[in-house]
Image (tube, rainbow, N blue to C red; front, top):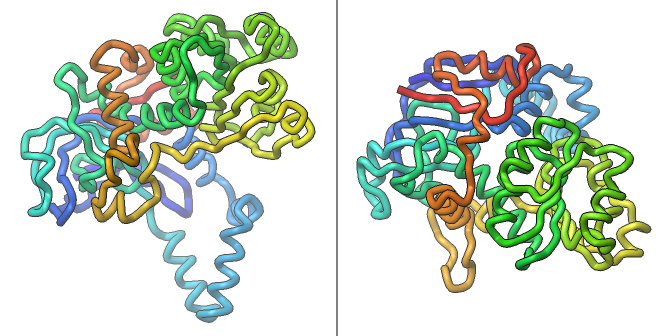
Length: 373
C-alpha cells in the first residue's frame, strides 16, 4: 500500500510502498478514503527535518539529555547505533482520516465491516491507504458527512476540547487568536455555543474568511488590535481568549493577557511561546490553561491502545466522544469544514501537498485533503 513517510535524516517526504497492516486485537482495519494534512503541525515537522543535527540539538535539549543518560547507562557504541538507526528510519505523518471498515479484531464489537468511520491518532490515522486504528480512536461517520469532511474529525476535537476548557457561556465575548484551520473551526464552535466572537490573525484573507464563517468581528493583528477588542467588548475586555495560533513567538500569550478582562480565562490550544508575563496575568488574576489535544484519554495507553473507556457518567467528554460531537455538528450544518478545504491531492501526489506547506510552491492554502481510491 502507499503511505506518506518522512525521512528522519533528510526531512524529505515521499509516497512509499509499505506492507499493508493486518487486523489486530482491539483494533479496526480501515480502508482510507480521505486524510487531512494538519498544516500547522505537519509544517513544523517539515521545517524540523530541514535543520542540521546541531540546530535540532539546540532546540531540543531534553532529547540531548536523554541521549547522554542512555550513553552513561548503556555505553557509547550502543547509544550511537541507536541514534544512527533512528536517523536512518522514517516517520509516518498524519493523525486525522476517514474511511470504511474492512476488518475488525475478534474482541471488537463496536464496529462492523462496511461501517463508515472517522479515525484519530498519530501513528494510527496516518496518510496511508489502509489504517490499523485502536477502537477508542474510531467513531462512526454520520450519513450526511462526506469522507473529506470526516477527515476533519480529529482537528475538530482539538478545537472542541480547547473550547470546553474555556467554559464559555451563552452571550460571552470570546477572542480567538490565530485563524488557521484550528482557529476557523473554533470560531464556528463558539458561535454554535451562542457566544460573541472576535478573530485575530496576520493574514487578511483568513480574517475575511472568519467573518464569512460567523465571527462577529475580525481584524488583522497590529498595534490597534487592543483598542479594537476593548471597543468591541464594550470596554470590559474579553471573557476568554483562545490561542489557536502556531508560532514559537511569545506575542500571542502576551496579547491574550492584554485584551482579557479582570479574572478572564486564557486557553492555549496551539503550539505557542509560553513565557507568561507574570505581572500582567497577576494584576488581572487570569486563569491560564494549556489544552491537551483531543481531550481526556489522550496519551493514556490504557485508553488509546488497550481500549479501556472512561465511565460515561464521570468523564462525559473523552477524545472519542469529542470527535463524535464535532461530527454531529458538521452533520447538522453548525460547522462548515468544506469551506476550509483549498486543495485536494490523490495520495500518489502526496509530495506535492508537502511542497505546498513547505513553501516550495508559492500558493495560499488552508485545508489540504489527501484522497484515496
